Length: 327
Length: 240
Image (tube, rainbow over all chains, first blue to last red; front, side, top):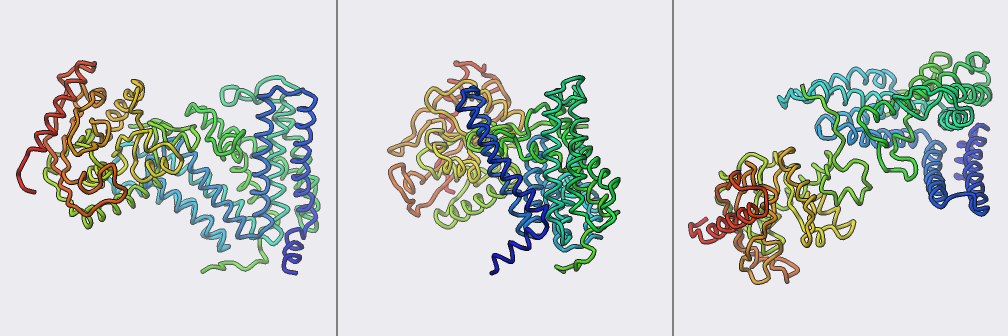
């Protein structure tokens, strides 16, 4: 009985079921395609191994992403917290910020505070943490009386807190809305489609490079193709999600799609810029076949706050839910 | 201004490779585990072995290398425990790869508790010694190593191997000779659990080898002088 009611809550909105089914179906389809191509002898052994590795990683990633979203608000915020800390770990080791142990600890506390504010449903504190944490990061290392490297230390740490705390934290805050499941799933799906579309369209159409100095494989056609495809997917799926609200209007839904695609692509380019500047290829080795956690979730970092404030401005989040529930 | 983006020395390696990497760098989680281990070891050495130390004032500013006679697993723990807390992340005992880095569990312990770096004992690669030497100088580290190369099986000190020379010959990095008394009686290689006998550590004045060339002849000279210094400490009969 309890299980049945949990199930009905988790899948209360039809879009939730569609996206979960679609994700599971996509994994199964991927396995079938690789198996058929392998059986037909169309894949070189190295490529075959690489494809199975990637699919295997997805088979772990998809449940790791979907289950917290289905499970409930607290799980979503906990998962976002862990994701933020994992990203900070990779970023710190790539940039060298990890050597500044105390400053890193302050960023960790900042990320925890942002997610605690989301858990408490305390919007005032949630938005106040960007200036407050940045201020604390700026002064935290001063008492050690080591001004050498101060600017680098503070700049790297404020950037890290912005990306993995303040910005990513919006994804968890969305879960304070009673109807958060289909929207978060839509964002994750759209960001994934955005990446794939840019790759596939770019490979198919070719043409001039987008920003070869930053990311040599991206093309203008891929960027525009991703913009078109992602906008269509978001516009269509947003209709049942926002039925009966101001967001239902077609231009607003198209606007949402454009924001997801543009912010997603800029998130990707931002991580490319970081990697290019440092001179590394991947941010880590956490996900076999993908690289680091950040290589997988980079697009989400800027999408979360952009979508949050767009939708928040038009319809608001969790306005009918209790606030300040922890303290 | 000091503006340089430098990834971790062991960046891009798998977790297993990282643990056994000579370029391993840990973050604040590593600092936390090193601190806990240090507190435990210091308490243990004080309560169970009544450790006494003479010559702490000889410890220089990093970088430096600490050497001693080797008769027990207690040697590394004792030498590391007398160094100041401020050096906690910079102290690296150099440990035998074939003993301490054979499995994931022992490697994790060696990395997160002891902060040891692995070295192959037989057919030591020259590139590995060069890596250690470069890190010692550039990152101002502290290495703890035992130039005998293995624990004494009868308590007597063996002659020193020249590998220590490859780390310090021709540089201004000081070597601090130490002599630890009582470790063989407490936990010799053939015993599994330690006996509660007293440990006495004598720390001698630092040696420098800027006058010796960084070649085979220089390395042998370093090893000979280090051995003489440690033997002299062994004969020191002042009470501590």
